[in-house]
Image (cartoon, rainbow over all chains, first blue to last red; front, side, top):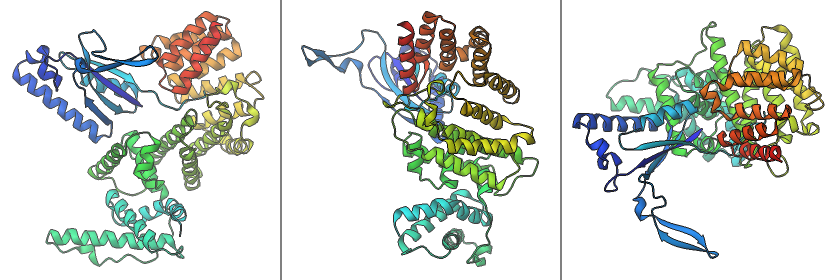
Length: 130
Length: 401
């Protein structure tokens, strides 16, 4: 089963890893920060070795997004961001795991001070007739 | 020789070639590499099929293994004791496919790794083909496979038949893997028609081979019967638009009678022998469906009895849900809804689409169209399957009408 782990954040200025730019993470003691970052690197490596990590991307500043809306029977471009919310989609990881439980376990490990992690199932083309 | 002919030979011979190599040299990764090199040599050299393709491939692959061991030893500045062991040119006939299946489904490996390794080493599929079948990037599948081989090496797993006491549990793991491969192929045959039943055919082929190797293991026969009886429904499970048709609404005249007959014949042979395991019970349920003229004319009392037995042998929420349907069909929807209500108290099951889909069908049966529509909509929101979502949204709309 494939899931996408979405990282919502409000890094100021916009930058990656978001942890470097959010006050909630920056206010932690250095040792704790180092340990959390090392943990994160180790987990990514493990997921990759287990063949569970399909990919991921850090996204550019939401403020620089270009939006295209259908107006007067033609696309009309405006400058972003899409949402007025404070936090924006900052990046994502795509994983392929055995079960929802495993996906939830991994998503929990992606939580970090200052970020909100969202786990979403991806749709697949098959189905059961039972 | 055409590429297609060579592929056919490879699919048939690769488990035997690998088995012969593994008996002499235990490391799966090395043996797979050597077998691959032998295949490449065959592609270059074979104008037509040699008299004994298996012997040819084993001989060439064994030489590659020895060459490599010599080179490694030379690099390390050591003499190599096995260097003089030239492989016998024509190996004795022996079927290693069971040992190879058991190796690929070794308990040290995660289930997805067992599946991937089985398709690679036993079925002879390429990494790219397996990746395509499971809709993941080829690099990811490659990592999954190398990790699996490394795990076997680190765990010191040897290529041999397990102790008789361990065999049933090891065979059960193989059956789980083969059934998973089958289901992956079967459930994918709805929706985007990107798979042509390759995985279902391969799962059935391997289960048949396993049955030949272990004729006294009734669960192997049960799994084979289940796959055949399920596969028989394949022509009826999608409509003209490619949308999913659930079992209850399928046009049974389109079910394949030959596969049903094969499945039923297997069951008639093994069921009286008892004790009856979960695959035999699931197959028996599929056989009751197969023998019914339509959903209403199904022997639901019989199905309910079988689900009662299945719940004792292999309890789980999916079994309880199916039992709820059987109970509802036999004794009325209220009794079924009581069972589903109990399941909904578990937060994990409350987030599972099938719990709500079954509840919706039972509410509809009870005449509660509003409740059914809500439950269908809830199920549609929870499923990750595109054809199921289309089907459930359609049901919700129909119930609201």
